[in-house]
Length: 243
Length: 224
Image (cartoon, rainbow over all chains, first blue to last red; front, side):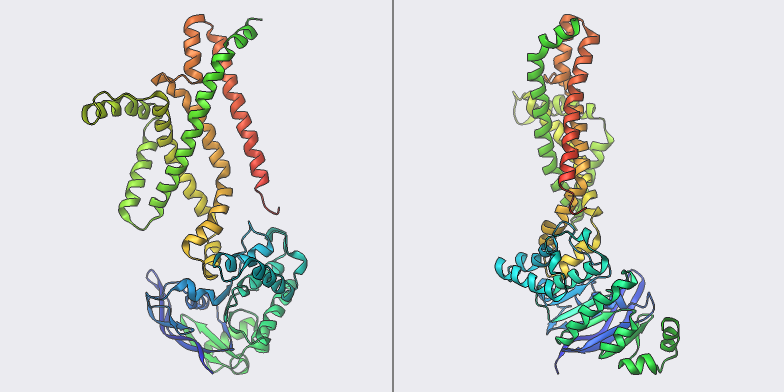
């Protein structure tokens, strides 16, 4: 299998605070990588570096063969192929559900109006929100908002999806509906990097789990290896608190 | 009754003066918005000299009284122009009024527009960029429409402030509402009635504006 994302010696600081210290990993096409770790461990920052929402201070990141650190790389072009889902949804409140989904394909002219509309309808069906087409995000529940946000990212036909704690801002009873949509994506073979506290999700669909702490990847392996038989004390310690 | 007699009698000149006031206000607000957008871009740009120009402009306008700005531009600047480029330069009164009010309101508009842009949740820009939109596209499609909605009450407020501030233009003898009143008072000596009348004119215009603002605000609220 080909590597979709290659991260080498990634370093990221905010001012004097070094948040990511020498991170290296590779993510294969179709792989589902779940990133876990305590808050402040750098896992969200790591994810945000993968589509260059954060400028990195050292190392290289290669996505789809594009070197994100190369000044000649058209980041806008690369980002079109990387979908991102945020903790707080970040839907566009001044656009209807369908307009949210159609906005990027129409603005970037990757689809005609008819194609974008058809695509939006398909995606809304996929996430189970066909009846919410013409309403504004403010009228949706948290779980529904997040499903629209996922559909919005998928409208650009990305081949990698990044999830930044997609269920952390949701009421407990809404977590399931979002995870189910994500599981559908796994079944469709999407390459996914998921920062989450949902250990059940990690165990069920994760191909690999990364445990991060203090700006390092402390341990990585299959869900079973990491979640059930951690080698590092820090991993065991963290798991004892969350499981 | 005397009050109504005078009200009817002075109505024609007040109509003219009101048009003058409204004309200066609307055109000034238009140019102030243009200035506001430009200087806001200066302020948000990465180039230090542009930031500096914007900061100096805002600082001068905010740090000096409007009356002084008027006297300086109308008398001072015209004198400087006569001494240098155009020997027989004289301000057209309306143009002078619009220049003064635009420059003044422009500084406030700059801060107001910037405030609106900064009030839009940071996640909006990130979401737009993560979809592949450029900074410009994200600004145009996502940030500005929301910022405008947030700014609207302050823009209307600025409109009302500018409208009332035009009364100061009477010091350069521009025949807007206040100057018109002063001219009439000089003849009929009806201080109480005349200044009450002009007060009513201002109040009516401002009230209409405020009502309009409420209406627009309600119409631009989405999905709540």
